[in-house]
Amino acid sequence: MSMVRWAMVVDLRRCIGCHSCSIACKAEHEVPLGVWKTWVKVVEKGVYPSVTKLFLPWFCNHCERPICNTVCPVNAAYRREDGIVLIDPHRCIGCNYCRAACPYDARYVHPVTGMIEKCDFCVHRVDAGLQPACVETCPTGALIFGNIRDPNSQISKVLSTNRVVVLKQIMATYPHVFYINLDMDVADPLMGYEECVSCYEVR
Amino acid sequence: MEVNVLYNVFHHESVSMLIAIYFHIVGLHAGCSIVSISATLLGKETYKPVAKIGAILVIILFTSSIFFLIFDLKQPLRFWYLYLHFNPTSPISWGTVCLSAYPLLTGLYIFFLFQGNKRWSKIMGALSLPSAISVHGYTGFVLGFAKARVLWNTAVMPSYFLCSAMISGVALMLIVAILRYQFTHQDKSLEERESDRHIIQLLAIWMAAFMITNVFYVFSDITVMYYHTEDAYETVELVRLGKFSFLYIWVDNVMGNIVPTLIILFRRTRQSHFLLFIAGVLASIGVFVMRYVIVFGGQYVPLS
Image 1: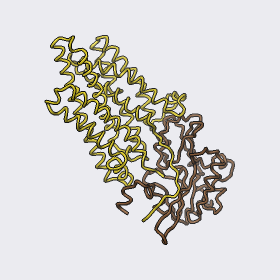
Image 2: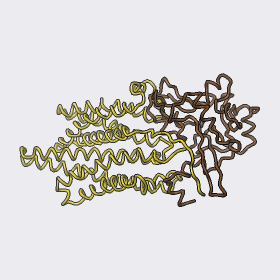
Image 3: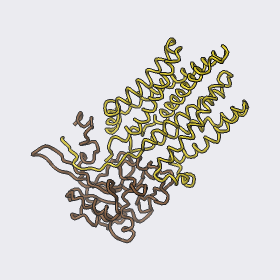
Image 4: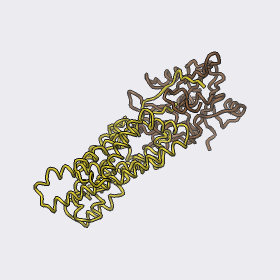
């Protein structure tokens, strides 16, 4: 087993919804208009005067058992020993199957190159000993990135002292982006969805 | 609790219209192929025209289907990478093997069939039958393995797709057989006319049997989904009552399955070639609409 397993913790108590993570990602990777590697979902919950605004930074979850890798017909999607899920741009045929299978809608087609792309935890920066661009930019320190197999890392300490949840645990992909203080109404893609029938019937 | 999404990102549909059309065409030729081979294997002399009609349709449809598949790729010139890199857990990799074996085996079968070589057409038919089943069966697994989409991720999907392929294939053969009869029956003897009418009746009964099976699959899929997760409940409401309900319930299942089945089940309506022609057209439209609804309905419910 590798001594390194990169992961991310999103401390939603600190997130102010400034979208600087999205912008840093756009700038770092030259992500074209209309597609995103990282974005912040913004949800308004409740009715006046009891109303709150909630934020949910969203990226590839770098799963332990990534379904995108399982279904890729040419093995272009792969997971490194340190847990980062990547796409080999020289091998991808653009069949879109990984996009169809990903439960997090984390992937998109680059409008110019036709390649499938997604968040790669800024692997070029991580390999150079730096933090991902979004983590570096976050003004409130809501994003914590590190090696969860190192007990002295900041992320390990945060994970061991806080209650964390992951998105769509039912998918059994074992995501490695953990959220602190996550409101399940923000995480649920159907909440606030205009045509959601069950939301009105049940809640 | 009142929840309003103020900002979110939705990426475009990952599976496009080209793939929905591909699923339909591959279903058509797989269905034709399975019927043609079954007719040859049964070995009755009266089934010979059925086998030949099916074989000709297979050649035309298979050739066109590949273009849809390749042009859907965002890197179409890299399609041959599928042969270089095999992923045993990916149904597309297995589909590549099936799609490569199928034209070879079925081509030999068609060659021997038109040569009149009974022995070898039967042998090659028996060998190509599994490839004909798998060439459409794999598309059901492609959707079934897409874990994120509840409408696709069901164990019923491969059988459901195979069954609808049989309907569309038989419907196409029925349409061609009726047209062939209409244009050629005046030049034929009474025995030959009787034989052609028998084939049309036979194809119609096969189609009705597959449509009844198909309706059962739809019923079991929809009812089981009501007892599944919230996403599944939402998706099934979408196809039963929501945006896709007209297409899925009325066009696909009522007009495309139930009405043609009733036309075929009643002896009096079954005798009318005009009504059987209508049944074949309705069934073809129904199956295409089913592909469309499954592909786009499956991607309609947001994931983020």
